[in-house]
Image (tube, rainbow, N blue to C red; front, side, top):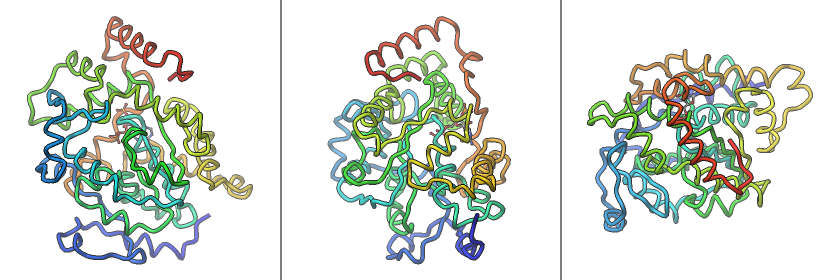
Length: 354
Ligand code: PAP
């Protein structure tokens, strides 16, 4: 499958935190290197300091769980991220060759990033010497808005085409250049009760320094959409509706279906992004190898993805259980019924089901 001569590309992966010097440097595409993303704490600790500050401070605020979040055009975003989302609308330039991995949080993003990156770049790297063995999928596929929020946006320009980039933004909030460009968007969604449980567990590990909210209160806030990039129902529906009118632009994948039949999911994705598997690749088991490399069991055992802090980034938070229906271990029947009722109401008439 892979051209081993290109492995020199992988050998040049830099594990250094980008220095202040890097920020001012003009880096050409030829010098592109994959590397660790900047730590999320840098974003959380940043002060609002742009022309958007006044607008942001005037928006509805939520800081009981995560946050401070602000509500902008019906979605809740971390205020430091929102600031950069507003700034990047005009400056982010997508390329027609980009592929965008989109999702609401905790819906299978890490997995889909790994798969899309591997499918797209399968001629570049061997399975035994693959970037995913040393870097987290979020390093290989940077989240556009977090890269901006970490003031590291020049890095996106250094990546050679075709780039695989991620976003948790709702479709309506994506930069115009992504919407107007030919670049395909692969969107993954997941049953919201499992998303909530996944988010709850992440918050337990992430928000240690804050006064913790109760499970019941977190559930209430989730249902009100008061979580980063929420509400989830509107997030899914925006992409789903757009996928109906522009099926060549957006592919909707479901986490549960991917778990049941990953070969089919990977094959559909490869076809959609214009990188279908050849007969020879299929005969040589390339699809199975991609599924194996990107599998939960494989990725979570890698040193880079263990709980230890790597470059100030706790990659362990992205790998927990990876099962369907874990909500049953945490929610009462009453909670689940109320939740399902809401999901039914939100999706009513849309034609979409989880
Ligand atoms: P993010 O939004 O913070 O990037 P995201 O990757 O979307 O998180 O979701 C994390 C969930 O995907 C976790 O689910 P859980 O809490 O219910 O266990 C995580 O375990 C699961 N996950 C991570 N990697 C994989 C994978 N390779 N295959 C399947 N599921 C995965």
